[in-house]
Image 1: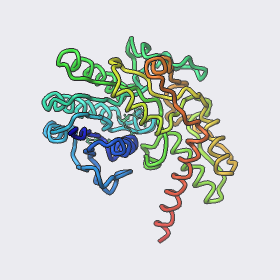
Image 2 (image 1 turned 45 degrees about the vertical axis):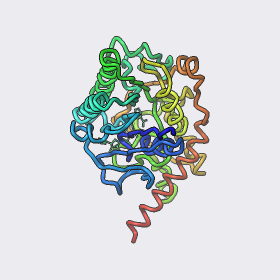
Image 3 (image 1 turned 60 degrees about the vertical axis):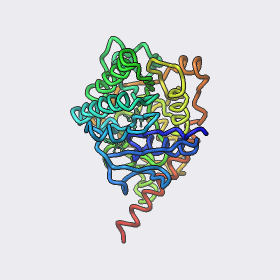
Length: 330
Ligand code: NAD
C-alpha cells in the first residue's frame, strides 16, 4: 500500500504557508506546519495538520521539524512590505539561518524534495528604475545588486540551495515570487504589503466617513500582483518539476499603485481624496515578471485577473477591519 507523502511547511502560520498547508492536505499529504508565532496568531490553522511552534533559526528545531518528512517547503522568513524591509535589513538577513539549517536537516533526513521561496527582490535595481519596465527575466539577477538586506539574503539562499543540489544531491527547487496577495495574510501592523494596506485604508475611510487616503510615493510606481491561488498552484508545479534553476512565479499584469487604488475604490464603492507621501518607502520604480520560462516549461500562467482577486481580498480585509473596530468599541 502507498504511504501518504509527508510535507513540512515552514512558515505554515503565515500568509502563503497557510494556504499551502490547506492545498497539500487537499492533495492527500500528511502535513507538518511549523511557525515561530504562537498558534493563536496563525492566519490559518488546520486541525488535521501537525501544528508546531518552533524557531527555525535554530539548528535543532530544524532537525526535529524535518524528521520523517519527504518534501520540505521553506516559506519561513522575517519579512514584510517595503516599509518593513527597508528598515529591518539585519533582521531580514537573519532568515539565512532558517534556510541553512533546513537544508542541512533535509540532507540529514534524506528528504526527497526541497522548495525555497525566493523573491523578485533578488533582481538588480538598475533594471527597475522606470515605471515603464521591461519585465524581469531570470538571467537579470546577475551581475548581482539585489535589494539591500532582504534581497541579498534571498540571493545567497538561492545559491546555497543550488550548491546543496550540485554537491550533495539534494533535489532543490526555487521560485522567485512577485508580490502575492489574497485573504488570510498581513493587513496591518507595519509588515503588510501594498494590496492589503490599500484595502485596509479604503475600508477604514469608507467606514469612518473620512474620505481621504494616503499613498506612499506619487503612485506612478508600477508592479504586478499574483493572487494566492495561482501562487500555490505554481509552488506545486515547480516543486514537482525538473526545473533546477530559480524561476519567476508572478503575474505580468502591470499596474500603477494609483490604478490599484482605483480598483479597490471601485470594489468598495467609494471615491477618496488622495494625498501622496513622497518621503515614504516606495521600493523600485517599476517591476514586472517575465513569464516566458514558466509558460514554456510548465505551461503555467496566473488565471485570476487582478480585479477578481482584489474583490475577494477587499471583502476579507474589510471584515477584519469591522471585527477589529467592533472589538475596540466593546
Ligand atoms: P508571512 O510573513 O505571512 O509568512 C512568513 C512566516 O514565517 C510567518 O508566519 C513568520 O512567523 C514565519 N517565521 C519567521 N521567522 C521564523 C522562524 N524563525 N521560525 C519559524 N517561522 C518563522 O509572509 P508570506 O507573504 O507568507 O511569505 C512567505 C515566503 O514567501 C517568505 O519567504 C517571503 O520572503 C516569500 N515572498 C513573499 C512575497 C509576497 O508577496 N508575499 C513575495 C516574495 C517572496
